[in-house]
Image 1 (cartoon, helix red, strand yellow):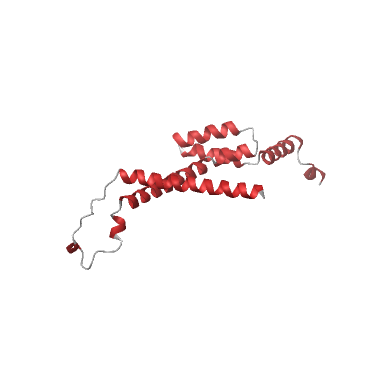
Image 2: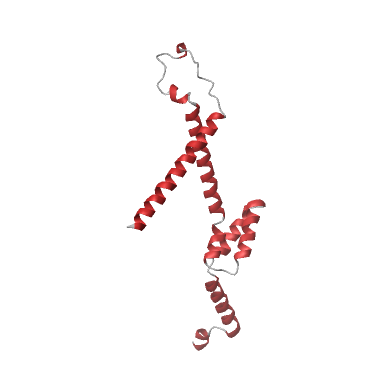
Length: 152
């Protein structure tokens, strides 16, 4: 019971901090801006003033829109970074010996050329045990020959 109350209190506190931060950022950006269409005469419109105009003339609403836009841009940039680092995360997850190489190639792909990033993806997602087994089988059959064809 105590854990449930503690979890609910933690959730409500976290929600209040997030909403308070959002509103305070909106208010801060609202103080930095002015809306230039506040005194539009009614003859600019073919009918009465649109009902949305009051909302669009509010600095606080424009602050909210600015914070939402910044949040979306930041989130999209974060997702693009996660996509860029998918090779590094995969090699770390597989505990590959190539993790440092994949990280270096990923950075080269970011700053130099995208081909390095593609190479990092290939290295990170390749099953090196299967590749080693296949190469070993080819070398073994090249040295010792194919026993089935000799028997026939």
